[in-house]
Length: 397
Image (tube, rainbow, N blue to C red; front, side, top):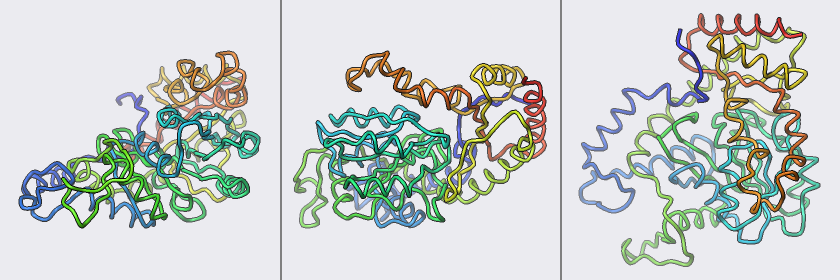
């Protein structure tokens, strides 16, 4: 059996004939890779627009704007929500670094809040972090589990703050029966090579607010207003923008991948339950708390040991058995702000202040181990891996 060391989620596993057929059809229709223009030679197909509509319909929102990456999606969504230089944006300490980079790139200041035992944004700490300069909150649904959105929405309403959800990692997860990202002002999604569905690179901004959508559309495309009274080359503009466009090639792959989402989620749950049933009665581990309205993506299973030392020992033993982890701890440096001392100026703190501030999150994360759940791994392999893991955990004193 090959070693499972990839910190990925299912989309990359399922690239196959459907994606190839979409690409072949794209070239049969004229091979136009740009999302706009070339009307006479593209056989009436605008795949970025098709992908946007299909994605919006799937998750249940009015508007979707495709962009070049999940990082771009966060930045575009924040801009469309009104975040400008000098504003403060609150997000969580455990997130991919892109969340903070997007805030900084807009000239805003990221305010880092510790996570609780859900490993997501702690609502108690969130409320303490609000100042008169706070403009928005970015809760990040990490590793398939929703933030405590009822509490976060209550706080946002009290202080009149926009919520921009970062759901780059958890497409397919739900809150109270609805897909994550559908009840806030806007949401950012990612389709890079390690996400639930993939387009190689790519992202999406979704919203139910027409003005937010228009600003996102304009900002991602050099300020184009998409004024139907003028051809694209004479289009009007009201803001400056940038180029965060998605290509037709990415969208073609996305259209094929989106059709696989339900299968991915169902297989995640099925394979997750094999691991959970094997581990649930072990006395020396606990599990990440899942909020009661959260229906997880189940792309990984996270358990915790009593101490950091025990967790490190378990991971070492897992590696020797060919068992990999998913972001925790194998990519923790890119997912936990405690390590981001190259951004001290933008964060407005010293290295010691950063480390001290992140200590509550460090207590949770340093004891945690995340097991990747793969769609195409067969039941016998999962069962064998679970047995190896149980054997390791039974040796922990």
